[in-house]
Image (cartoon, rainbow, N blue to C red):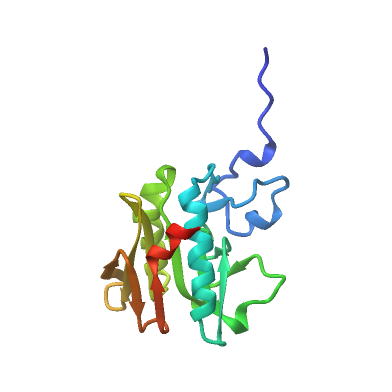
Length: 191
């Protein structure tokens, strides 16, 4: 029994992969991210993850003003070695062309990560750190806490370029920033 040889694209070039490589590498698996110059591949997702992303995407689309667009699973180019893919992004409508493969941090109003078991460290620590350092003002971390959709709302402190938790929401998510949002989180139980 012999193992299949690794594809050439799996071997990183000297210095690691770059953000541009995600658009050039052949046969790259869908939803591949670049974190610290390393390729990160998507694992199979849970039903909670899929439902939470669909649920929040729909609710955000209904709430967002005409000047914004809601996208799921699109990368943000944060630097030459950083191109993470949040589960949901809210972007300026002027930056939402149909041929885009990535957004710039200045286009992003809100990044949302639904935490998965295999990506807890990235979703809870590294990716929020990268988003904050890039100046993305609003970040939500979404978790399954005892079977309940829980949203941790963070806002950027511009002086420190770190996030501050401004609220933990279990049943109702009512906010005035980045725009007016009022979501009954318990509605996810009907999906």
